[in-house]
Image (tube, rainbow, N blue to C red):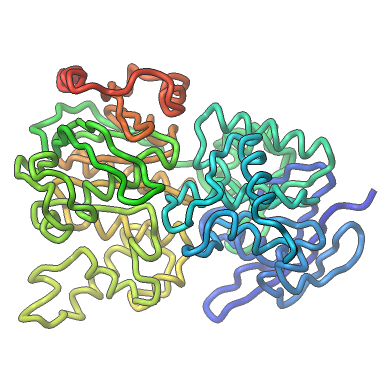
Length: 512
């Protein structure tokens, strides 16, 4: 039997880097094949070559035993190759069903397609509303659109990049069952993930890349997380050692925060109440689209509709303050959307420093101090080991993980009193994720109050002192992480259980 996909000697070079260097890879029919590597290892470039979005400089692509040259994604889809990108290819002004229709024959009826989307989404546990406009969706919800779009094509080869980051633990297992069923029916799956345990549980084969080259091929079921890590980064992952601590005074206090929908597809916030103390991390778990976006907008100052007293920063009313004034009170913010919110794509890293460092050290008499912002950017690049072409490199030239390290580093260097972080390690390799988490813990130990919103439960359990779940615009009272279980948090994320009532905030105040 011919292999479904064979790559031999694939090479792709850009002016500053060789992204793929003589890469070879074979995927059999019905095989779930992982591709593992650090950010910048060349995985995304290799997937884009398979999908026809990038043309290789050298090498051979063989599909079902025949040499081919995939000239475009449209040709790839015609061959039976579907891909879900880490950075989504969706048009904000179109609806979900209109976006999905773009990759289908022109005579596709939108009403029947909407029904197929709803059915497929329900089958795989991915909640979607076909008539919603994409600009109203969170990052996690946009990923669901991409996954469903790929599944609708009944592909022979399905390429998935970090597909489980939007799912509860229960839904992850359901997706795994679906992928195993697809594989049993002959569909091949290329699976990119930074979750080593996930790869070991699901995949039959793993190709490991480092610096654009293949460094090993193994059966991940026979490996440990430590051995996979050594193959990927050349060493074992650094271990986090959170030290015991006693939280200080409340730095961020939210009480009676209720907000109506900002648009038709938004989530209404109902009686949100919690506090974050100096020297602690409060983790917020929840399935994407349950009010995280709205809560973050209200806390960061993007949405100023809340009553002034509903949000207090260092015991000062802040509900009506804009983002700039909240920063003056000591607030730092890392949004979930890197390009467009966290960084301006076309601007240099040095210029992007100004998005949050706007003080006498960077601006004097209305003039930007170029030397100062360049030095800050260089310091972030060095301390957080950001792979970039220097402070003058454009933000869009960085891989997703490296841009995330830069944005987190930019906020950490401000030494904020309160830091709100959304999806701190979204799409970040395990080595960089460990570094980011270590920096967040160090900031906590220095007395900062951190609110971390993440759909990575393992991450929240690793770094949080207390955990809070948001579902359908309501939150449950925070519980000490040591008293929580993944299964219980997963159930709460799915909306099972009672929502928080005002009286229940007394439970969380008694945690210390």
